Image (cartoon, rainbow, N blue to C red; front, side, top):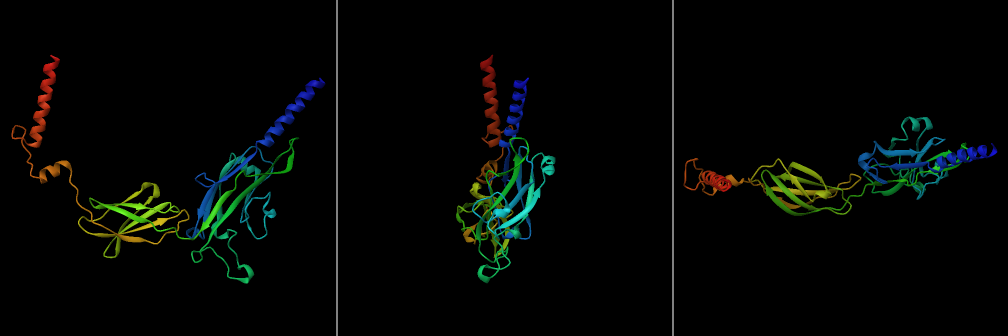
Length: 304
C-alpha cells in the first residue's frame, strides 16, 4: 500500500511539473510574424496583434510595450517612463477564448511619445512632422503552477517579444526601368528599394492624375489601366514602406497606350480576305477547313 501511495504521489507531482513546464506565451502580428510597423497614418487609431497562451496559467496575462532592449518580468520592472501598459487578460477570459485572441494598442500612446521633451525640450507626438525611426517591444507575462500544483511566484514570459517599429522616414524612391504599351493600359516595370513593400504608379495627362495602380514589390511590373489609346501619359512611381510612408516620386517616364490586334484582326489588316466555305482560293477560313477535312479523310482511310 505504501508503494502504491508513493507511486500515485510521484505521478501527480510529475503531472503538475509537466503542466508547469509546458506553459508558453506567444505575441505576434496579425500576419503571425515577430515584428510589425506603424506610422503617422495610424496616429489616433488602434493597431492589433495576436496573443496565445498554451498551458494552464494561474494569473492574468499582463501586456505592456517598452522602449527597453529586453522584456523584464513585469511592466514595473522596466525603465521608468519607458512603458505603456495595456489592459491585462484574466485567466477566465484566457480560458473562454481557448487560449488565443487579439488585442489592440493605441498608436498615439506608444512610449516613444512624451508630453515634454528631454531637458525641457519640445514634446514628441505621434505625427509626420518629426522624423522618427524607433523600435519597441511588446511584452507579455503570467504565472504558472508550481511543483505542488499551487500558483507559483515564478513568472513565465513570452518566448519572443513582438517588435513594434514606429517609422516616419520616407523610403527611397523607386526607378522606372521600362514602359510597355498595351491596349488602353501601360505596363510599367519598376525597381523598388529594399525598404519598400509596395509600389504605386500614377498616370498623369497634362499634369492631372487620371489613373493609378498599387502592387506589392514582388510583382515587379505594375499595369495602369483605364487609359486612352494614342495619348501620351506622364508616369510617376512611388515606393511605400511597411509603416505606410510614401517616397518622393520618380517622374521621368512617359508612355502611350496602343490598340492591340488579335491574330485574325492582324490577318485582315495585312490584306487577307475571309473566304466562303466553298471557296478554294486559299482564304484563311476556307484553307483551314479544307486542311481539317483532308486530315479526317486520311485518318479514316488508314483505319479502314
